Image 1 (tube, one colour):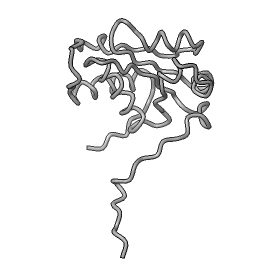
Image 2 (tube, helix red, strand yellow):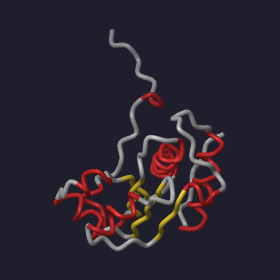
Image 3 (cartoon, helix red, strand yellow):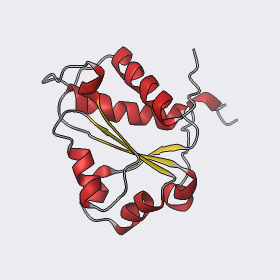
Length: 144
């Protein structure tokens, strides 16, 4: 007899950002090798998983010139960029690609200092995600 599968353990499949870009808020994030870069990326993940019509997209693919990813950014309902620090690398990548940015945020602007670590707190991620969601109109479905 086959083993029972717990539905909550199945992966949540995301909307295809290439097929549905016009209906999605596309999020590009920093994935820097310091605390604020990781926080920015994790905020993008949280907004994607708990948000409605928000979808993380690959910033690196845009930097590499992937036509599909450039097209996603140009067709997006809204483009949201989350940088880790004032260097704003993700913003520079999206700007150079000719993609219009609707909202740009930097994690250090939320009072979080850049640290040479990848150990981050869930509280910092949630704080930044809630503020960004409120500012851009993403409704979050956060389960207790």
